[in-house]
Structure formats: C-alpha cells, structure tokens
Image (cartoon, rainbow, N blue to C red; front, side, top):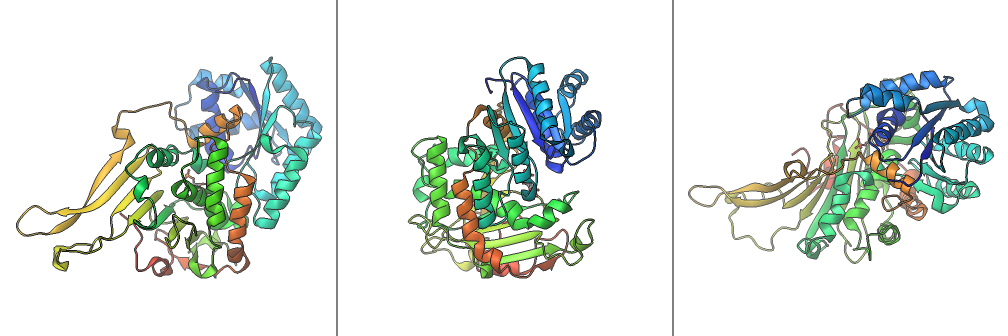
Length: 467
Ligand code: BG6
C-alpha cells in the first residue's frame, strides 16, 4: 500500500460511479488496512451537507458494496467523510482538505479523483489550482479524456497548466481487472502461445462486451458520450493493446506504455463503413434523453493494426447496452488447417474455427476450442474445448476490484496500469473519420445482439457470442 495517509478529494461524489464503485472501494481499502490513513472530501454540484453525504455513502455501500458492512467499520469510515458543495468555492475546499490533514496528523498525500463528465473536468482542475491543492497531490482523471482529438489536446494542455504529467493518472478500469492483467501473464510468461500470436496463425480477433444494463441514472452523461466514447475509445482499445502489443522490455510503466502506444500508432483510421451504430428501442423515451437523440447505445466495428505482426488481421469490437447477455470476452480465432482429409459430412469446420477465448469476468476464465472425434463408429467430429477457471484453482490472493487496485496504485504512484496522453490522443486521431461522419443509428430490440447489420460486418466469420 501507499506509505502516507491519503486525503481523497472526490469530485462527482454523489454520481453513479462514486456510488457504484468508488465509495465502496475506498471503504474496503480503508477498513481492510491497505492505506495507513484515509479521509474523503466529497465535492459535487448537489446542495447537500456532510451528514447527507454520509447517508448517501451508506446507501451506496449497502446497495453496491460486494462485502457486508460491519457496524464498527462503518462508524470509523463515516467519521472520515466530509463534503463541500461546488458553490462553496475553492477556499471552502481548501479548508476541508486542511481539516482532513490535521485529523490524519502526520504527513499526508492528496488524491484528487475526478469522477465527472468531460465538460466538468477542467473546471474541477481550475478549482484545485485556485485552492492551492496541487503540491503533494496526484490527480486521477476518468475517461473519456475529451470527446475528440482537439478537445483531448486542449484538455491535456490545460491540465498541464496546473498539474505536472507525473501527477496525472488517467484511469481505465478495464486494465485493473485481474483477467486483463492475466493476458500479459498468459502471453509473456509462456513459451507456448507467443509463437503463433500473429497473422500467420490468427484469422481475426473479437473483443465483445455486450451489457444487459441500460442507462440507469446516467442520461446526462450518456447522451453526451455514447457507446463509442464510453467504451471503445477507452476500454476496448486498451484491451486490444494488451492483446496485440509486442513483448515489452520490462514489466514497467514506460516500456509497457511504449509498446501499447506503438500498437495505437499502427492502427488504421476507423472508417465509417466498417462501423455499425445502434440504439435500443425505447432509448429516446428514457428520462433525460432527447426524443430525437442520435446517440448510439451500441457499436460494432472492424479495425486493423497495420504492422508486421497483424497486417490484414481484422479486429472486431462490439459493445452495447440492453443487450441479450452481459459478457466480456476476447476471442482469438485461428486459421483453418491448410487441407482437410475429413469429408464435409464429418462435421469438420462446421462449428467455426479454433478459438482461444478469454473471459474478463471477475475471475479469469479461458477456453480453447478444437475439433475432436465423437465416440462411436466412423469419424464424426465435434467441437470440444479445454476450459480453465481461476475460481477452480484454489488460488486466492487479496482480491481487489479493478477500481480498488487502481486507486491503490495511484496512491503509490505506480502508473503501470494507467493510460498515457500520447496513446489517448492517437486513439482520438484514428477515430476522427468516424466522429466526422458517423453512420446513422439503427434501432435494435432490447435483449438482442444489436442491429442485424452486425452480422454483415463480420461475415464470412461469425460472432463468437452467444456461446
Ligand atoms: C464504464 C462505462 O466505464 O464501464 C459503463 O461508463 C459500463 O457504461 C462500465 O457499463 C462497464 O464496466 P464493467 O466493469 O462493469 O464491465
């Protein structure tokens, strides 16, 4: 854990992410002893007081926490919560932080967490500057970082007027998921897979993250954002980099970022004709949504990494809200054998190619599918699979949720699992043709796999999901 007690200034303290992940996560880190001391100053537009903020935090822990809340832990934690309204201004914020530091007693560090939409990020940064809360501080920025290349460049420039790059932690919680890190272990700690991890053996890659969730209370955020900015330009591309990057020279922040950024540099621009945008039926009637909204709640696309390893291998990405299932998978489809001695009637190839599939659910799962002989006379083939589930191994570490892991890393100053300004700007640059000329949104029924054209996008292949 971090060496120093931490004062967390949480912007967007009453928002969806704070309630779902950040407050329960900080509660766990603080009560399980990962941090030597911690106090939280919530900040938001809401005109509430510290007592109401504590009540909100309590409800959040009960509703979204993954562990039971013990009364004495709650008492200790709630006593560390304070609240400042944005309208109170920088002086009030500074006073609250100083009070928190005084209560912690010894030398402290500050972690400013900006859990706010893109339009509110800079005002928060300016407020921190005016409050003189820059020294001994790190700042965690939530995605999406800007909304296009120009705004991302402007955001980075403005950020640097207040904070130095070493202080800035751009969070992408998918990289904090255990199974995401396990991709690196799987690829680079084994001699078996890396030799076939290229265009000579791999036909295509799918990164598929359908969600059953709808909008919840997030219309304000989501209407400005949409599925591409919310999920693809952030999480899905970051995961793609873990799948596609060259072996880094060391498992350190700089070499890892360099290799990821090389992947982003080699990516071709996203072409609108390689994209399917969808919107679930009924979205326009949701509270807070424009009745003529063109915001996409679904996106599927084909993209290419034009380098030595991956030239010509399509990467298919898909994600959406209110879909038939919640899944987070990466599936590597291998090439067919060069020649088949099996007659078509044996069933060879009928169930698609060999797949290596990673499941990014909470505990790693993987499977490798292959054809094998069905018992009995003759030669009938069936698709079989080797399955791995971390939960079956008995290996239990200090299981941290993705956000908990990353908050702790930021407090320690470890940026291995954080993204970089350069990488993000490049991702916006390759997105520009799509952002400039987005194809029209197509309606899809709730509980489906998206608009029909999603099948044409991937043809002659097929989506791995549903299993
Ligand atoms: C968030 C997006 O970053 O990730 C949400 O803003 C999405 O729209 C969520 O639902 C998915 O995260 P997870 O960890 O539940 O897969």
